[in-house]
Length: 239
Length: 123
Image (cartoon, rainbow over all chains, first blue to last red):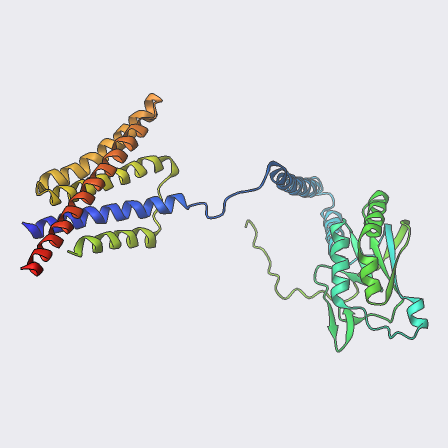
């Protein structure tokens, strides 16, 4: 009789334990509480909205391409293909670009040179930081000391030399060309660079960063090395 | 004696390790069910101490209380009355009463034991 009682109490306690555990699991479900205020959520929404509009623009341009293909299916498919090819080349940075932009000049600070300071190589980290800031400000194309920056460009230190696309940078002064989509964008870029801390950061490395006034016509050279796309594979039709 | 605790620990472990979750709309029902279960459990312990424990009453009370509490909450949702508060109140009060009774019984038992020991030592 007594044994029977214990078994039943054990079963009941087992059920209670299970229920408590499930309740506990359910309550702690959102492990991190969402503590953002309306403003933060709005900002995130704005970001997503921006992405949405970018995607829509992309869809529209692709639709245009489709339309062009369909129109010229019989007439001149070749020219449509060439147009697409040129557009892709432009996107990849394989063509020379002429347009509005800003020129940044990096030169050793003259007063420091006179005092006999040793001017070292510009650090790759600083250049990467600058590039990030440029692309954040909607730079369309950038070239550093004549080397076009593309998607696969590496800026790194090779045997003590700072290289872009594996080409060592020439000793300062050298120029960084920044192309933008419009003159207005170039002005915005100029202003935001002026307001940024880059001038100070460069001076810490004994360089002067001179930001020139936005120019209407700036020619940014093409990427002149073979593109390596070892890891790209062809997408099968219909995927 | 330790078998019931083993059951409790096993249940807790199973629930925590499998990470079962229920939809948050049923959270209320589960919390009431837990309360009802605890109430029945302490009621059972009290009954055992008062020597009026009955297996049938205990087991049927356990399931019936849980179902009743959840049903009351369910009804409350549809009637727009927070009936689950009634269940929480009833079970809460009974829980405290049962625990108070258990405490008193245990205290008297401890007192009696001490008396006996004192008597024995005097003799």
